[in-house]
Structures are given as structure tokens and as C-alpha cells.
Image 1 (cartoon, rainbow, N blue to C red):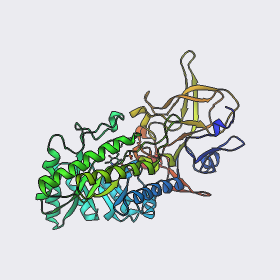
Image 2 (tube, rainbow, N blue to C red):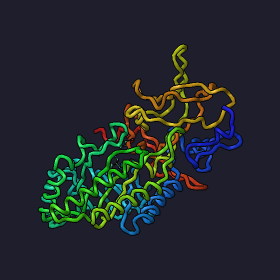
Image 3 (spheres, rainbow, N blue to C red):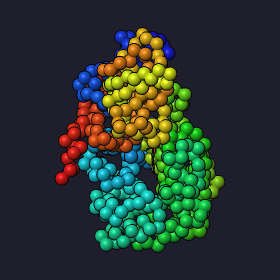
Image 4 (cartoon, rainbow, N blue to C red):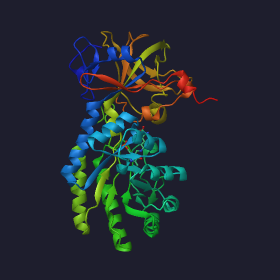
Length: 440
Ligand code: LLP
């Protein structure tokens, strides 16, 4: 692979290749980081995370003034240092479990700015969230509303609640992450009348303070039109509720889902222009309907952290099967990145040190005892790729560390954060003792 202008054009501006052929991330040499921390290694570019938070916050300010919030969907990546960054950037957060609430609390995050989602909060979850002072519940269904009422009532507290509504929109994305359709485990549908029903229930409960509505139609969405349609449907619902029940929503949360670029053929979405087109559409539609626009919330996860992440691997076995294919095995796999195995997600995988030899097509696979443990097929790598070489998988900041597992009792990699001229450990490497530490 020769270093040409073309090979120096990367899918994200925090990646570059030095004249000597070495790949850098946020200006830092990947060989030095591999040497210092070992592989597999999750790297995060702090500046990129902050840049994305500011892009969202700036765009909502331009579009909605002070009547908007940006909540980082922490399922995309959740660890203490990330919540500190979110706190410093003035972001709210979306949490879905006691683990995320606990981690945010440990980071000193003000949980009044946290929205507690999930389609099935247990009584223990609800109690924990109330005790920790979580600001908002996003209730999925009537049963959950009754549970919140019962638990809040026993504590003589009131909970602010948004209702999760399914607007009936298919985001043309892959099925496993499509959540806004009527047939979904999430939320209550407008189409079936259940959305209006749970609104009535919420308004009747003394320890539930209804604040508005929430929806999330899917993830890795590139078509801004989806957001415009969703906004319209949701605002129509706000108006219907106002007319039928006399209740005008204070907040409307449109969820997350903006797509990010994993491979060259995908576009880079401009966060500001998507938000601004949504704000124009919402303002115009609120005028048409003659209602005051609620405070608008966005819940981005992937588009905040995905391209702030990169995973480094060391090559092990390289196996040629004549007439079939070449397998390049690395020291990680579906344990640190299950996304190809689960969704067939595309990735860009590059050699850390460029080579003069011709590229050839290979499958990059992991070390788990499972044939489906594939990181990516059809990867072009130099034909002299060998044991000990380093590979970089780009755009791994979202749904990697948070979806990592200990399958085969493999310890999870550490998380190292890069700043312009330094690096620091945010999550230490798991040891085999950590993995076995719960065994009695
Ligand atoms: N809000 C809600 C209620 C959500 O369910 C999600 C994602 C988000 C916000 C953030 O969506 P984002 O901006 O990250 O697209 N594991 C899958 C993605 C699952 C997304 C689940 N919900 C993946 O690796 O692609």
C-alpha cells in the first residue's frame, strides 16, 4: 500500500498518516500507544467528543434558543470519565439502567439532568432512580406509570415523566435498531390509541407530573427527512392531546439516531444543518397548529462518540486457504466489537504501518472460539501483513465498550483517552482475576 494523497484522505479528520507511513489518531503515534498500554486497546479522542457536544449545543441554541436540551444517550458508551466530560460540556444524559445511573452519580453528574428510559424498569430500578434524584422518567407504558405512582407515592414524592410514544415511522434502517414502528417493544403507539390512553392515565396520577412526550425512531439514520416526518407526527399528537384532554406538553423529546460515517461510501452528516432543518419545520408546524412549541430535546449517542473512538489490535495468525480466502486473526474480536456479528456493520480497518506491498482482500477475525467471531470481511490489507503487526479499526467509540462481553472469559480492553498532547487511562484493562472475581 503506497502512501498517496488518496490513502491520506481518511473518513474522519482525527486520523492521519505521517510521512514515515505510521497512522496517527488525534496526532498521536499508534505504535507508542500500543507499546504503552498493550492491545486490544480502545482509544477515545477527547477533543472530538467535546466538538460534537458543542456542535449539538450550538445548533439547538441557534434553532430553539434556550428552549431545547441535548441529552447524551449514554448507552453508546458509559464510563465515569465520559460523564465528567458531559457534565463539563453542559449536556444532559439519557440513562437506561441502575448501572448507568450509578456511574453518572460517581462522576458527580447532576442527576436532575438525567432522563431514565428503558421499556421495563423494575420496582428496584424506579426506587433507586427516585432515591438518587434522577430528574425525569421516560415511561414506556401504563403498567410502568402505575409502578412509578405506587413507589413515588410511598415516598411522598412526585416524579416528572415523559411518555414514550411510537409515532409509526420506519426509519429504513436495519431492523434490529428500528424502534419507532408500531410493532415495537418500545412505547405506546399513536395509531392504536394507546398513546392517548396512557396520557390520560398519566394525567390522573397524583405522584406523576406529566412533562411531555418522547420518541426515538431508530439509529444510524442518514435521511434528515425521517426527523422532519417524526417531528410533524409528534407535534400533531401534542395538538390532539391538547384538544382532547386540555393538556399542552412542556417537552418533546425526539430521541437520537443520527448516522455516522464508518466507511468511505457513507456521508458525513452535518449535525447543525439537520438540527436547523428540524427546528424550522417544528416552528412552522407549531404555527400552523396554533400551539406553543414545547422545549425540544435531542438524545444523540452514536453521533457524539463514534468517530471519537478507534480500536487497536495486534495481528496473530494469518491463514491462507488456497482457492478460498485469507483470515487475519487479531487479539480482540466479538468480545470488544460484536457489531459485525450482530448487524453486519461495515468498518474501515487499516494497517498502522503502511507497507509497500500490494493489498489483498482478507477477513479480519477475532480470537473467540466461534466461527461468527468476525470483525469485518472484504478488508484490503497489505499482502505482507504478519504476526505482530498493528491494525486500527476506525469509528469504534459507540456501542463497542458498552456492548463488550467476557465471552470465552476474555478480559475487556482498557479505555485510554487522548488529548492533543497527552493520553490517560479512563478504564483500566480487565485481568483474568477480574473476570473470575465473582465466582464463589
Ligand atoms: N434514545 C433512545 C431512546 C435510544 O433507544 C437510543 C438508541 C438513542 C437515544 C441513541 O441513539 P443513537 O444516537 O446512538 O443512534 N447497539 C446498536 C444501537 C442501538 C441503539 C439503541 N437506542 C448498534 O450498535 O448499532
